[in-house]
Image 1 (cartoon, one colour):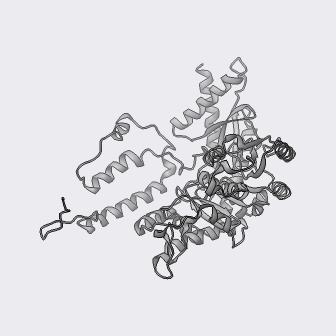
Image 2: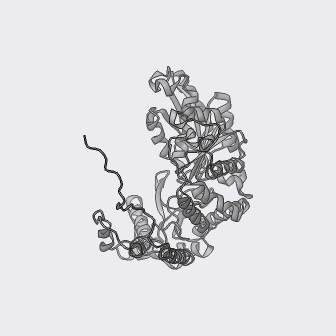
Image 3: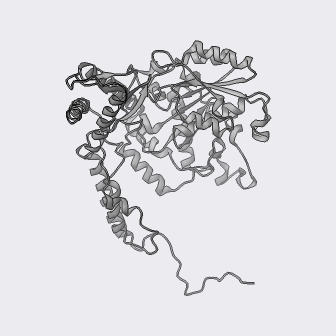
Length: 497
């Protein structure tokens, strides 16, 4: 039988630590200086630019077998990565719905990686900080101290956490032991027809299927129709289903519309439903002095999903799921094998944070949020939310004042939907697919020329451009530029037809 060879006196043991810390220290100072300049001068760069072929080819290189000097490795990062970002830290990035990061948070991510703690739990400072940040989120949203929560990758996972607890709480059987097939009645979940696609993924992942999520029509403001919801619940009960959960949206992805959370809380209480709020866009308005009223009722939810990497501008990634009933939350996920049992003293005597979610190994997401909140204070983040919402309404006013542009949906908070319609000078009235093609081309040219990044969507059957101002660097001058350049490009495209 072969036996492992042992170390001898001549064996050279290896490490990933550098042979000369002084050289690494010099390069590290350069990296920090470059990082400061990168953010300081972000406004001077294009929002986005296409990568040339040689850069794309660089990312097809085969696995490195031998070492390279760290300075050369960093040179590749500067030239081929940092120069071609997605662009969401730029003041004129308004696509989809993303935060714009902050330097203090980036330092937090660096220090978290240096400290290297696994946030599965245990008796150490990072675990306490993780719990503290969750407690701060509860305070922001008016949840009781007895509630629980967990930091996750983002809003989609935060929603899955909340909806998993809802499923288990309303199943009527021990789903963890026997599975969804043991339920005597199929569950029904309810959300508006504007609900985020992650909820479909949740239904599928939970074994309930897409049809378990009933989409309820919306009113003129694109908020869930409460009467239609009540009717759907009654129909499902009569048909032998078990209504289990209503999902309120605090800021839809298309337009930022906010469901009547107070009314949904009442329906949930009357119908014995779990009340979950998808607050990934708008839950944090609860800390905004001028706009907190928009999410009144969120504190009555059984669970909430929110995204600190949006309106708290933490670097990606960090989401948060809050659950009012901490026992139900833990009962949904906790598994305690012998090798993860708690001890009366020592490292394993702390709380196991992995008992509140799907990950056993968890990154140290809390530090970047903690540092930024300590530096700026929650009141400043609230004012920045108010600032973005005011900017959204300012942009809507600029669009209404421009004859060649039109709003395609009411501007509720900081999401503005509009389109270029032309001035009728081109000899034809653009409609349908021609209008969609024109606006899509405007959107692409804005991106390709590095002016601004917008996305597009369809609202009430109308294709439109969509601006989500979720950026602490945006200024009024950026909004003026967007309107001016949209009109310029629209006219250029029409003239070239």
